[in-house]
Length: 249
Length: 107
Image (cartoon, rainbow over all chains, first blue to last red):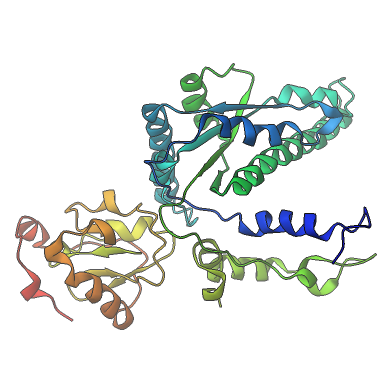
């Protein structure tokens, strides 16, 4: 194996893939571990280099180190998971108590006002509304790219991670923003947790390459009907979320 | 890891827990519920729903309740799944405070 060809640097690729494959969701961490101060900068330096629409970089990262603050945020999510359960949402919710165990605790903030930097008309028309919808997607993808870079940097250092999503609801914003001094017109979008796992992490089931990849035309074999998706949700979802890949089928 | 229904449930069986379980892992016997450890995802949502605090995370179980870990696994295989809350036994409240009642477990 040689890396002489600048466009076939396999050893560099393998080093990256070791990090990518080794990044596993963990939902309970070793709470006694103290993150070395410089690790926050090492990790968020990766977030800083992500691509974004119009190079707007519409993201902010708030590192939470105060245990009381972590606990208060965890309380919100535990309460929210109980609310969802009582609605019979049937989503296999994780135990959000684990949030407060995370030595590395970073709140990801998005500034949706930057959608105006993307292709929009700004004239209030129906067409403008459609362009704004697309602009929101651009912004979400931008923040996700930056967040993922941070997750991989944490994984590269040896940590495991937890990407807490679905914080869009108005009550989540109302609960979390004042705690963190976030201006009203910005939004909490994710929480990024990292640290040594409390228990050995396990690799989740992943689709195979042929199941996600095609050349030139969509592979019809990979199309699922709505009924098939509903069946997957009923029968497989909680297994692929909470079991090692070897125990899914 | 799993969550476990312990002795306190026997003859109470209030079933508040089944209403919130996202993965339908509760199974119903004649006078007690159990959790299928193969299906439980440790979300812990059921714990505060139980009016008699009968549900524990495996790691938090009182030592004298340890046998219920095995019992839950065994009985979940034999008993049917329960997904909706229903009325408990009419005398459930009389048994709330009774500590030792494993001798009354009906299979």
